[in-house]
Image (cartoon, rainbow, N blue to C red; front, top):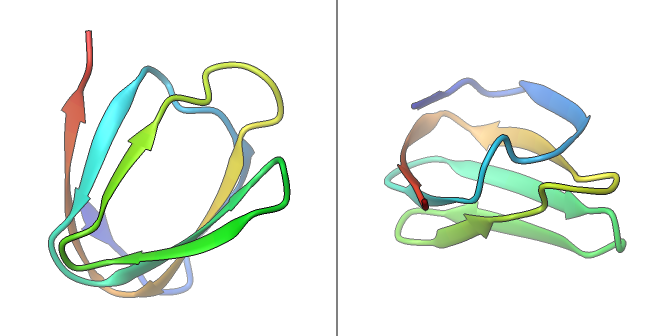
Length: 71
């Protein structure tokens, strides 16, 4: 998946439980509980917020990531 700087995805849920492995770039994730974290090269995010308000994703630096679906 390509990361385009400045792209913001307002409140949304993960479509399914999935791991996101960041190869390059930086993404800021704000969880519905208020926590904000920045993910970059080498970080792994388990996106499993299938219910509720979800999260906001903002791309800070262009890059690439791999998505692995958990079934």
